[in-house]
Image 1: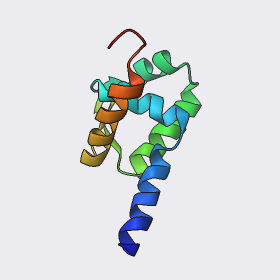
Image 2 (image 1 turned 45 degrees about the vertical axis):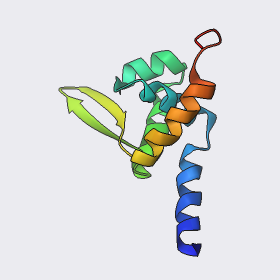
Image 3 (image 1 turned 90 degrees about the horizontal axis):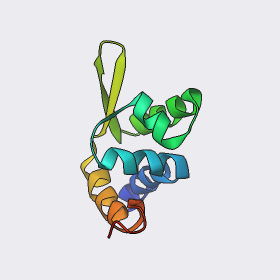
Image 4 (image 1 turned 180 degrees about the horizontal axis):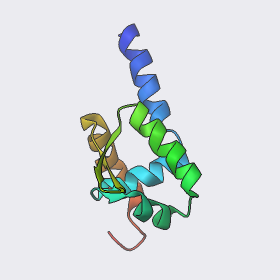
Length: 97
């Protein structure tokens, strides 16, 4: 349990950012390209790149390249499960219920 607790703590740190949670809420709906994520969040390209880099380094998202466009998706099963719950309760707009 001790060993896993550090792993889980690091996992949660990867999620523990308002900006990264917004990105993950968007990705919960399916794969998105960087431009779509920037437009939806209002983050600068530099900031988006940093957040996506952190999520990628933590093994939370992966990407594919289509020519010059990068598409991101959630690749970690636990994140998919956690985000399904968070999406249900927090990501949907008011009135979507």
